[in-house]
Length: 102
Image (cartoon, rainbow, N blue to C red):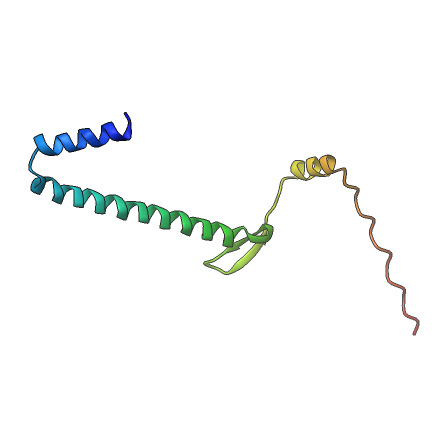
């Protein structure tokens, strides 16, 4: 249905349908309900995004209640797969520091 046809149908139903005074309060209620519901949904999504960003920032898990930070633990199979995929070589340990003579 084109926009012009939709406009014509709307205008025709206004002429032949129930009086406009009966329709307007219902339209206002539904409009307010929809706007408030949409605002609540958007606010909830923004809050979820903020919570996830705080919790998993910098590959760490932050517990906002206890204010403790833990490292994300990945399975050993995942670590091996990443090493194989990126062709990473294990680091050799640094030499021990020289001993001091007394």
